[in-house]
Length: 122
Length: 107
Image 1 (cartoon, rainbow over the protein chains, first blue to last red):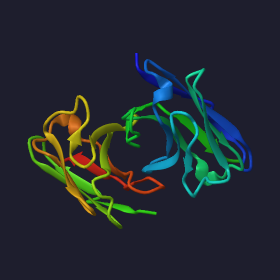
Image 2 (cartoon, rainbow over the protein chains, first blue to last red; image 1 turned 180 degrees about the vertical axis):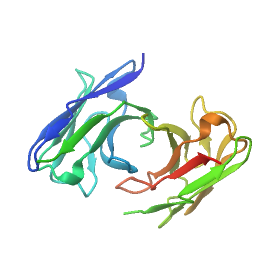
Image 3 (cartoon, rainbow over the protein chains, first blue to last red; image 1 turned 90 degrees about the vertical axis):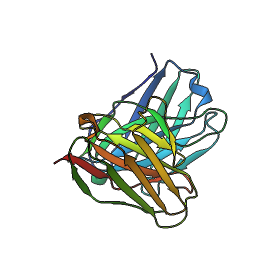
């Protein structure tokens, strides 16, 4: 079955760190760019970060640049998001998402995980 | 950063009616625009990409049009399962951005 499963969310204090993981199955993980998209409670979608299939190219939203790091381990079919210096405004459900295309990255997302909730609060 | 503005914020219609949702970009995104549907408690689902291409498995009642700065998602005849929140997304420029969403509710 083609799926993405996020983990690693939880409650963290402001200034703290958390690492999210996204386990992929059912497709050739290394062939696809991957992204993280978040959604604050009751709010809309916000693109957070993206990484190419090889991991050689990474991209970040200005709101997380310098604090978050995206990475992937293609041998483990797993995507990561290391989140440091967390703020209250980072509170959200974090989704990992798979790119629609393989040969030429589309940067559209045709497969999403169920999300993992990150709560930043003291 | 390209800002996507969706209108209306809320659209109240009845099953069987036609829905027209708008997404306007602050600068041209060519045809690099997608539409997603999100139901409560679920992840988003890709409906349309590159402005007018239906994703795999998406019913023909969903169609997208537009280019440059003005885009439209049309649902030709609403089914009960279509009532949800719809988002547009551009991939023309980094950072890739989403619109704020249009909630399609049952009248």
